[in-house]
Image (tube, rainbow, N blue to C red; front, side):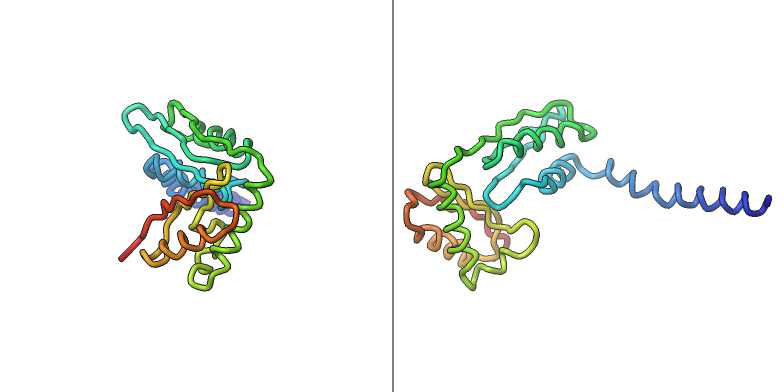
Length: 177
């Protein structure tokens, strides 16, 4: 019985020491990396939303920016960030896009036009595709990251081909070459 109790105690101690680096690692990550992680893990965040942020390291203030289609996403973004260790204040400048059937039609037409094109459909892979389509009163903005300048140009051309779009702003960034 004494050996059993000692073995259980040693096993529990081993688990605590094995798990400690995993918990310590979360606090040692830079604040910007932890903010980014929390934002991309939001359940309602999708390709029709654009979230960005800036961290003031001196004051611990996080400035949230971007556009979202769901008002709940704006409040959720502010709530998850303000509970992070090291954050003293959250300034939530996220704009909620107007609810419009016209804009919704354009969103889905843009999605089909961009991601349905063979050269760009690889960007649709994963839980959060890398090209975000923001539609505000018929004006489209593309944000995100693509591999090449050619992919950026193709996405812009495809976005301009959707009927009913007033303008397209191509803010895609090129990751390499």
